[in-house]
Image (tube, rainbow, N blue to C red; front, side):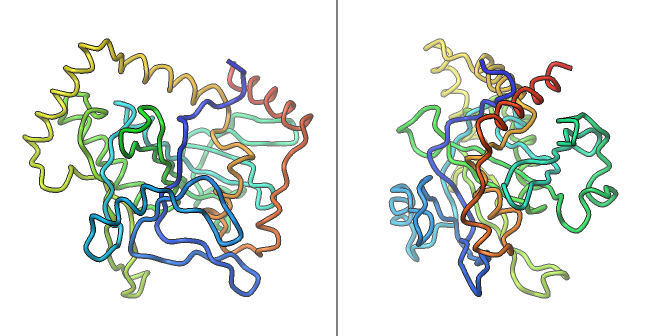
Length: 297
């Protein structure tokens, strides 16, 4: 395995709430009250819809996709949902600092260093909204690809907090069979004082619609038993994934820069958003070497 390169789950597409539009020379998020499932191909008109998007919409009378049947790849909640305080370079989309509120990995003039992480409110480097919570949830949709996932990226407190709680709870009540549970990614809305009565939408994970907890647990046990009979090693899969995530200092790479910038800095000028600078080969090798040095400490 190449040291310094984070190995992440294979991604087949993206899940988002709303879309990004261009207005007055800026790329701005357009709020929506539904999910959109897209492929990983983007044109001038935006991200191309994934075939699953249309297929799932047919099951909804109003055509709005507000729930998606999913399963999870891992039993460990922290492997399905990675949430950290993050700061990215506004020009290149490269990660500059990633922390958990105690320690962080930060790009400095001396390379990537391990430093204390005081959280965004108390960090001079991350002031002004440069650093914020960043969550990435990988889920499986359908049965076409056993290891392929769709990724939902968010910087919203409500989504991150709710998803983290649900995953921990479902892991506990299922007896560590989180990857066998029939689940659903659901869109929820609420109004707050800060939103001034305007609904804000966030992601939640529930049991499949119409299923009781008893039915869901029974199906999880059956799935678990079938996998054991086929020598499907969930523990080994989680272990390999954990090692892959830990192989690099940062999870996001330059190829995902546009996704990151749209989520983190949606108000940036469009002309700086499109031609994201890709580091040279030497720069990539230097970065990998620096990350490997930190990872080995």
